[in-house]
Image 1 (spheres, helix red, strand yellow):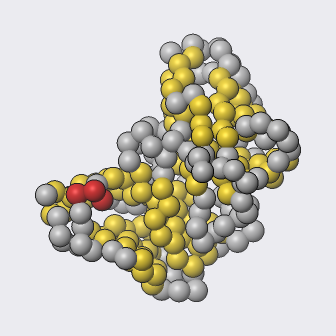
Image 2: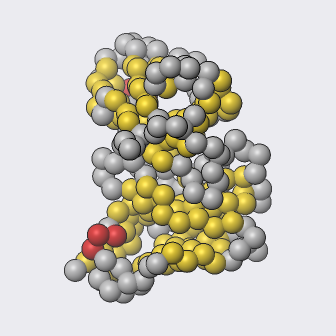
Length: 113
Length: 115
């Protein structure tokens, strides 16, 4: 039973354009959502997070939007750069859940020069 | 300040052997998490430990797997009598306190191959 779903295994965009990565969740108890970036042969690196009390969080080129009623969040990268090419994982945690994260399967982003 | 250190980076074991994966958390971090990533899958939580205590092992298989985080030394994930299905990347993460807003810092992982 996948509680966090990333339905697009891959995404390809042109340098300078916007990248939009999507994530859906099913567990209503999730109240913190995070995005991680992962390069091959490395561990995931924290990118940005959002609390369920907010609907938007911005950090430089990265913005995460949360739609609680739809149980959907998205990561926007503007402008996209070739160095952004990586696998992006959406993750969620529930209060009282020992801080463990539930990950999606990831979306491989390729930014073409 | 070194990050989370995992060793070995690659480990090959024959079926039936034991695998020991080590994780040294960042300096000052007393919370350690282990995750497993099977091919084409996301990371799956295995266990959460604080110094000398297992806090949550709800993601650990009931048999053959164990974890410890002693007062001194690294955290160890031990897999006894490995099978081909144990082949995966095992990631360790650490934090100085539960930090839900910032996640935690992951190591580069140990890639276990069972032949």
